[in-house]
Image (cartoon, rainbow, N blue to C red):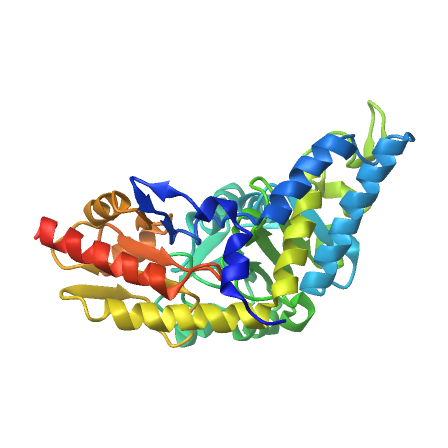
Amino acid sequence: MKFDINKIRSQFPILHQQVNGKPLVYFDNAATSQKPQVVIDAEVKYYNEINANIHRGVHHLSQVATDAYEESRIKIQNHINAKNSFEVLFTSGTTFGINLVANGFGQILKAGDEVIVSHLEHHSNIVPWQFACERSGATLKVIPMLQDGSLDMEAYQNLLTENTKIVAVNHISNALGVVNPIKFIIDKAHQVGAAVLVDGAQATPHLKPDVQDLDCDFYVFSGHKIGGPTGTGILYGKEAWLNKLPPYQGGGEMIKEVTFEKTTYACLPHKFEAGTPNIAGGIVLGVAIDYLNEIGFDNIAAYEQELLDYGMQQLSKLKGIEFYGTTAEKASVISFNFKGIHPYDVGAIIDKLGIAVRTGHHCAQPIMNYFDIPGTIRASFAFYNTKEEIDAMIEALKKAQMMLQ
């Protein structure tokens, strides 16, 4: 398929508006992506034509809703190349998926066991593991980062022991855009018998994860970062691990039989999907994935690399700029500051000029502490952005510098 940026932009209604009298330039894609019209239409269609609870009714609408929901699960299974559809669990997002796994491990870990995370993690992949360690008496260990934002793989290998039970690490850093050597991390963890959870929230907008090729034990991501609805997400887990972990929540759908004396649990995936889910969101998430696959992830990756290269070239011309996360393997995220200027002040000024970027610690305070900074300005590009929008950002940044120096 030919990559046609004008056609693609025409499919995102939110992009065609003004903010403070200026054309909107949306460079906060790492926080959430915008939605194509086909996704918006699918959400409306569900509530107009299908709305019914799933898995429980014999009536027509319930069966239609159930079929659509399970078809979406199979789409996602194929997208990530999971072996079985029941290894694909619908969640409310990456955070929920990590908490589900961490809660389960918190019940099977014991004193003397070890959990490894990295210095690059989002708070959502730190705090749940702290909970698990506090409850079990296990020890939390951290893979250190290097000055360029990469992880110290030599130190990682030294952290691994026979007591390591799980390694939880992101595929791509949300704060820096650094792509981690995830297959290497997984292979080394498996050599000591440890499981691996991969936080794919920032990776899935840019690439198709092949969970069988990666051989990860868990892979989590959010729907809202890949053109889907908010409040949707996926937890992939290997069948053996999902059978081993206890349920996360109790309620309807996750049971096989309930008596006051004993409850038995439903088979996968229902064991982890208690209650009425976000049915519309699950169905529409499949539509969003179809849309991205129609464009093609090779096309997306190539175009976003162009934007990243151009953005770095143009930003590098500005005086007093400092970049964070300078590894060769990067997603289309640029994290930077201007010497002597607080990132929030820059963000507030360029917002007046229609430029939407993220400023702050990006829920990754350990990274900011490492660099001894309060936060960064983060410009994150998607396949519907343009070089002309980058030019507009550059001009806005120049004005902000002049005002703040």
